Image (tube, rainbow, N blue to C red; front, side, top):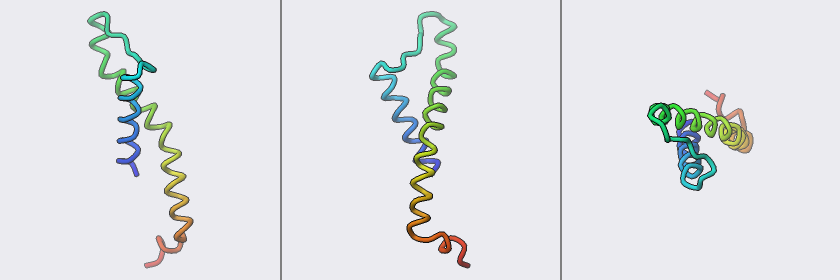
Length: 73
Protein backbone atom coordinates (compact mmCIF):
# COMPACT_ATOMS: atom_id res chain seq x y z
CA UNK A 1 0.00 0.00 0.00
CA UNK A 2 2.84 2.38 0.85
CA UNK A 3 4.66 1.57 -2.38
CA UNK A 4 1.53 2.27 -4.41
CA UNK A 5 1.01 5.59 -2.66
CA UNK A 6 4.69 6.53 -3.12
CA UNK A 7 4.59 5.66 -6.80
CA UNK A 8 1.43 7.66 -7.39
CA UNK A 9 2.88 10.63 -5.46
CA UNK A 10 5.97 10.51 -7.67
CA UNK A 11 3.84 10.47 -10.81
CA UNK A 12 1.71 13.38 -9.59
CA UNK A 13 4.80 15.39 -8.63
CA UNK A 14 6.35 14.82 -12.05
CA UNK A 15 3.08 15.69 -13.82
CA UNK A 16 2.70 18.87 -11.74
CA UNK A 17 6.20 19.96 -12.69
CA UNK A 18 5.88 19.09 -16.39
CA UNK A 19 2.44 20.66 -16.78
CA UNK A 20 3.46 23.88 -15.05
CA UNK A 21 1.02 23.60 -12.15
CA UNK A 22 4.03 23.69 -9.82
CA UNK A 23 7.19 25.36 -10.94
CA UNK A 24 9.97 25.79 -8.37
CA UNK A 25 12.13 28.81 -8.98
CA UNK A 26 15.72 28.05 -9.95
CA UNK A 27 16.92 31.55 -10.79
CA UNK A 28 19.59 31.97 -8.10
CA UNK A 29 22.21 29.60 -6.75
CA UNK A 30 20.33 29.46 -3.46
CA UNK A 31 17.16 28.39 -5.29
CA UNK A 32 19.12 25.69 -7.09
CA UNK A 33 20.53 24.53 -3.75
CA UNK A 34 17.02 24.21 -2.34
CA UNK A 35 15.60 22.42 -5.39
CA UNK A 36 15.85 18.92 -3.91
CA UNK A 37 14.14 19.88 -0.60
CA UNK A 38 11.41 21.64 -2.58
CA UNK A 39 10.82 18.52 -4.67
CA UNK A 40 10.83 16.37 -1.51
CA UNK A 41 8.32 18.66 0.21
CA UNK A 42 6.01 18.63 -2.83
CA UNK A 43 6.28 14.83 -2.99
CA UNK A 44 5.34 14.60 0.71
CA UNK A 45 2.28 16.77 0.14
CA UNK A 46 1.18 14.61 -2.78
CA UNK A 47 1.83 11.46 -0.73
CA UNK A 48 -0.32 12.70 2.15
CA UNK A 49 -3.12 13.75 -0.20
CA UNK A 50 -3.19 10.29 -1.79
CA UNK A 51 -2.85 8.20 1.36
CA UNK A 52 -6.51 8.49 2.49
CA UNK A 53 -7.76 7.25 -0.88
CA UNK A 54 -5.44 4.23 -0.80
CA UNK A 55 -6.46 3.55 2.80
CA UNK A 56 -10.15 3.65 1.89
CA UNK A 57 -9.56 1.20 -0.96
CA UNK A 58 -7.74 -1.15 1.41
CA UNK A 59 -10.52 -0.91 4.00
CA UNK A 60 -13.17 -1.55 1.36
CA UNK A 61 -11.25 -4.62 0.19
CA UNK A 62 -10.94 -5.91 3.74
CA UNK A 63 -14.63 -5.27 4.36
CA UNK A 64 -15.69 -7.01 1.14
CA UNK A 65 -13.81 -10.24 1.89
CA UNK A 66 -14.55 -10.01 5.60
CA UNK A 67 -12.41 -8.70 8.42
CA UNK A 68 -12.49 -12.11 10.10
CA UNK A 69 -10.26 -13.52 7.35
CA UNK A 70 -7.38 -11.39 8.62
CA UNK A 71 -7.77 -12.55 12.24
CA UNK A 72 -8.48 -16.22 11.58
CA UNK A 73 -5.42 -18.21 12.65
